[in-house]
Length: 166
Image (tube, rainbow, N blue to C red; front, side, top):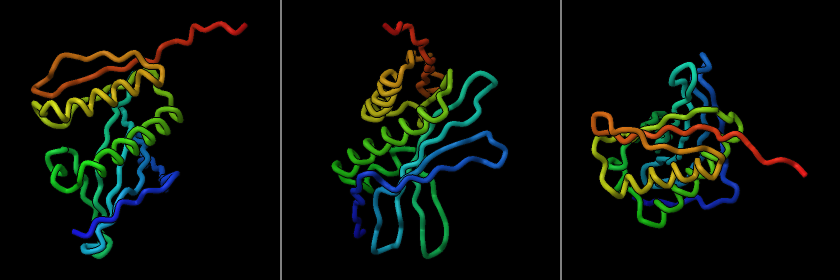
């Protein structure tokens, strides 16, 4: 693999929405493998969960420019060997930036999220807890829900702004 990390400020960001309106998202490239012609992206989404809530999720996408195909990696177990620690840190930064853009634009009242992996390792839970803390920064009350079939779940509710202007 001949991986070049695409450090840029700001990154090139693309937004999308599904035809039926049930999903919106943003994605940005973070690396290109010159040997295989694969481009790697971070993708963040909000999908309809139920009438009251949106589901937040993210993944790594690998775009094969030669074969015109895309693979989505939902588990960190699938990408743990692909990227070094510095690149993983850069991915977390892009993940936060894209999350900020998406949540700020759509401002959902209630957001649900869960781990993709069943019984994820502590290192993966640390990443998920970082994301939950970021929701707190964006004005959400974050609650861990019960573990469901081995998946950790969170519910975030927008906190009403009680600041009075002087």
